[in-house]
Structure formats: structure tokens, C-alpha cells
Length: 222
Ligand code: C5P
Image (cartoon, rainbow, N blue to C red; front, side, top):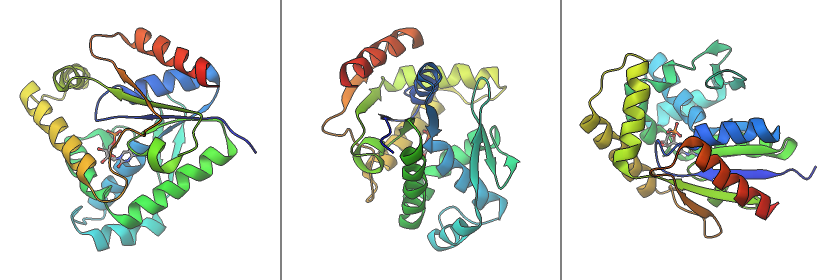
């Protein structure tokens, strides 16, 4: 089956999932949050009392893990072996350790395979770090979403406050910069703009404005 693939990559907290989810709803495509998959494996390591820096032990968990999604508002619901983990995967501890877990070869190959299988059977809007470069190199539309570090930290700060999480703006800025550094310097499939991706800088733009910009790019490419 010939499917339509829209890849949205970019650094942490650039608004990828918000934009991807809105677009998927409008187009009636499946939204695939690949970051949630890496977060789910990180949480599974914590649940099994495994150190996320232990590549062998984390990799050994993979055959036992089933990650699934269900529609939800304001965010898609995520399940690990049938148990809901939507909020748990957004904890500070998971966020701080997910870059280590996502750098492992076995983790990347099993998640890439899962993501490619989904995109083979459905039209997708898939967001992540390596979708345009590695997972769906033939995607009809590739977007690379960026925003200034300060604006990304401010957006996360507001979201966190609404959830009752009290990390300071400076701490969030540092955490975002660190995660971007690790994600773009890992050996396998680092965070990188695909040569044929269109870069969209969302700094100073509302969600509606960014959706309109990306819709115009999609209309041009499909
Ligand atoms: O998108 P989100 O911030 O939830 O992603 C969490 C982490 O998962 C990233 O910091 C990165 O380490 C990893 N990731 C990845 N490849 C993807 C998506 C996410 O390595 N395609």
C-alpha cells in the first residue's frame, strides 16, 4: 500500500508533538509520537530497577515491551504492556535519562522497525529526531521544526506549572540544551535536519500560525 508520510523532526520542546497531532487530526492520518516510545523504554528500565546507563540490561528488556497508543485529549494516551503511562513518561527523571536509552543500537533498531511498520499500513504524521533522515527517508513531506532555547524553555515552564511541576526556567533551559547536545552527538541516527527537509522556525509564532505554515508546505509537496 502506498501511504503518505509526513515527518516532523527537531530539537526538544520545539512544538513538534502539538503541531503533529493537530495536523494528523485535520488530515485524518495516524499520529505517531516516537519520543513517547523512547520514553516508555526509559520508564520500563526504572520500573525494572535497571540503571538506564546499563545498555545491555536495557536492551534485554526490549522483547518484553509492548508500547501502544490510544486517542486522548489534550495528549495521545500511551500504554506499556497495557498499563497507561501517559503522565509517567513526562517525569523529570525519564526526561533526564531518555537520551542515554535512545542512543543504544538495539533500542533504535527495534523502535525504527516498529515505526516503519506503522507507516507502511497507514498515512502518518510522525514526529521525532531521525524520522526524515532514517525512519522514513522517502517521506513526501519533511519538516524540521526549531525555536530558540529560551522560548522552548518558557513553553515547557508554562506546561509544567499547569501540571504542578516546579522546575525553574534556568534548569529547564539547561536540561533542553543538554538533551539536544546528547541527541545530536550520538553515533546512531543523531538529531539532524534531512537535506530535503524544510526548516520552520516557530520562535514568536502561535500554534495556529505554525500549523498554517506547515499546511502550506504539505499542500505544496503532496
Ligand atoms: O520528543 P521527545 O522529547 O518526547 O523525545 C524524547 C527523547 O527520545 C529525545 O530526547 C531523544 O533522546 C529520543 N528520541 C529519539 N529519536 C526519535 C524521537 C525521540 O532518539 N525519533
